[in-house]
Length: 334
Image (cartoon, rainbow, N blue to C red; front, side):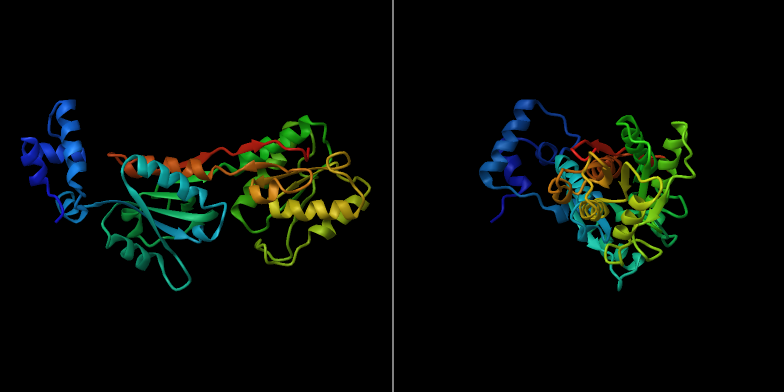
């Protein structure tokens, strides 16, 4: 038989309300000694919180639900869940995710999550994008992670793409690079914002930002790592031009890996002849390249932690877009 609150209260000589307060953070007043005594008795009796009964009293379970828009299919984007889960565990909450696939719309997925009576619900995406949600979702979803809702009704946490591009471009300039080409990710919001930051950093340095080459990494209009790559052809053309680059900025670490191979085929050394920098910090790629790749680390874990703070807050946060900074990871490619 599982021990009950009544059993613990009887053994400790306190009321059930006091026992519940010690175990579940209730409002009952008690000394630290009494609280510790109740906790010890609960341990001795093997007490397990009846979350079902507790949820009936307070209206929710100690859970955070996540609508996962391809998030858990990406190895490095799962840092969002790690950050969220770590902060939730500190608050004695658990996180569960339901994947939003081709056969599930947002409304249906939201209904599946709400059956579990979570404390709050978040929407998290694999990459930075805008999302169209049904009107009812704005009332149920407390925060958007790595994405924004088109209607602007939900607080959003997104990477500061433009700021990251400014920072890494300035880093290349500070290291003496003046002819910088950018092989970017076409059709993605992140790519558009990074291009803006790249050109702005060049203008701020007194250079012609509009004339700097920005080239698509793939033949398709929207980037996919499965699309036909143009990287090798772009690198060959850049090196054969009248103004060859002394640095190449890459839209992500996969593109950087292709740039490395193309430079090696052309007999160029990294970073002596051409510096290479990138975005994402996919560690299994960046640290294994030779030389290791300088890249901008996405703030995925920080987004997860900040999302937990919003989800567990007693007061709803203001509806705004929070842009979290990347971190420059200096390695040997610059």
